[in-house]
Length: 227
Image 1 (cartoon, one colour):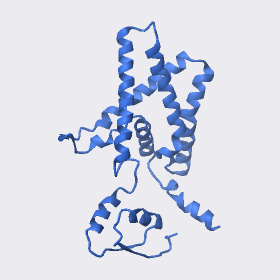
Image 2: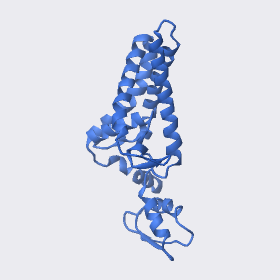
Image 3: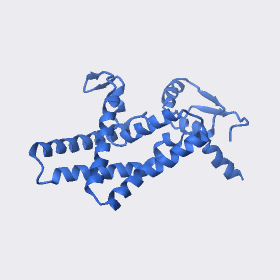
């Protein structure tokens, strides 16, 4: 019973009420970010001593990615046997559809979390891979068209590599939660004899403790919702 209550408590956030339009928008964002995530350019940062202004790059890039995914699915359905494109469509559609039905019925937000739509990512990548490979390898295609698809392939792959390289080294990112802990840790570490008193869940305090100096002490207050 203890372990069952622990699992139920850990998954309680799934049943948090949310607007379905916001959840669906988050789902679209996850789809786009699975290919290229330029979220770091949406903040004022310095790169090679040049200040890159906030031009909302993701908002301009996402419609292009959605159109590219749509065209790749159209191309796949027109060029391959039904058992091939149906397999890919099942990967892409079934899981998000079931999650969306659950969110609508139970007023939850499971569709808005990337970890639950991995089969969808796989199907999209298969569709895009077929599109690029076919267009690049065709002999009958015009030279300018082949150059276009070669360039698109290089840009997409380069964007994905760049996104992974930067996000892996970043302290905060769209898929890294509790980003405010780094700001809190910097303030706490500046104190001579810090004492942290908290009544939040132990897991959050444990993750924060890895960012604090050994001199930091903790006092945990137990309440009815602690476990």
